[in-house]
Amino acid sequence: MTETYTIYLILFYTNQSTGVKVGALGNVYLSAGYYVYVGSARRAIGARLKRHRRIVKTKRWHLDYVRPALKWRGSIKCVTHDGECALADQVRHQLNGVTVKKRLGSSDCKCETHFLKLTGQLIPERLKYFADAWNRGEFTKS
Ligand SMILES: [Zn+2]
Image 1 (tube, rainbow, N blue to C red):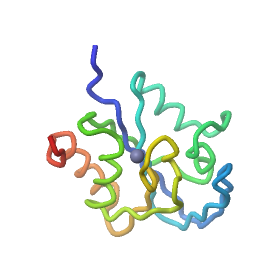
Image 2: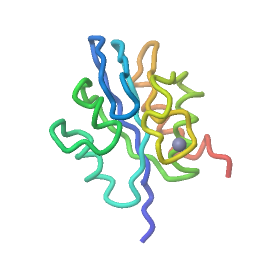
Image 3: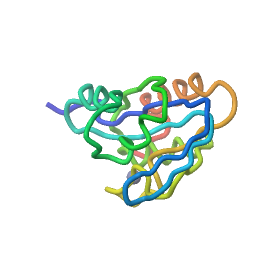
């Protein structure tokens, strides 16, 4: 069976600035505000999201290092369409996402990052609106 949702967005928030060491990437500075992570799971996306939500775990992905510094604000499953890199690209363009650290969350692809800071008003609402539009296929090339 082909899974409909294999990519996802996770929204995080922090009200205080903090620095985190992320494995070989080095120090990452997180200023107060909203962050979104774009990921994929070919199977068991629900289990993957539960894992990302947990704070105590063996560190495997870049996100695991920044996770303890951030509050979980929600996740949205997305239709596979053009894949997680295209989704990350659209988050950057449609929501003015800003790179926090190059290569953060994108060690398996050529993207600058899959972890973006979002600024402005009504971030959770805008992210939901964006994801709904993505899931309807409004941003896909094909
Ligand atoms: Zn990518």
